[in-house]
Image (spheres, helix red, strand yellow):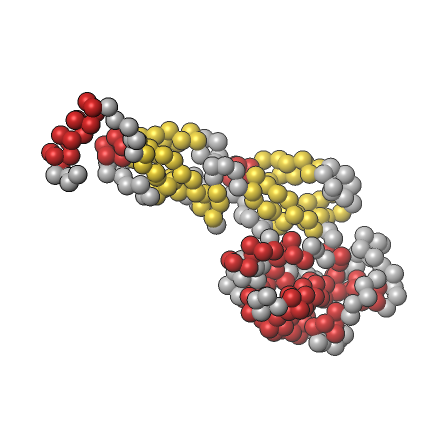
Length: 285
């Protein structure tokens, strides 16, 4: 049984409606958000507390379990109670998702604040009334192509989980286990040399001076494990980004940043040839 009175934490009565609970949470979250209270440890702890309270009371089913436990009903998570709650929980947003939506992506400590805490989920470490949800780390390649991942620690034992091609970072998969439904929140992990940004995959390649000046065609391995041809236009500059359409995550593209390698040492003959080229091209040296 939780010793915290989550209704008091949010400043609402026990018979408050779900809309009243959401409204109270949004107001308190805005007041105590760490971005607005940098370096204030008390505000940080308060923010954690109100997020935990909302994740419990904002979801009608977890709220009902909490109320039963507070009243001495004795229904713990995973016990015999499986009844629905009026109105269901199809519209429930976690504290993280709600704040991301209403605060333009900052709810989960995106941006500078995330660097110190590793993100909203890591900071709060979950919720005892939401214990039927876990985070599943998925390699970028599998997220792009789809496939199966053997997941341990599932209710009822290890189970192969099908990852749909193009699944988004943060998406929630509902998995049916021998112990009932279970939710997995997808966390896509970058795989060198690729990085994910939204549904765009980014990478870098190095080309030589001749390829940059004259143009070229280069075979690359995409994050999907496919061989693709990248056309280097003549006159490509170091720092230019070229795009391969549809080779990112889902319908996203693959962006390739170009670095041009300049020869460090030329023999006398090569230097003389390059001087003639520079003079013919009107280059100053």
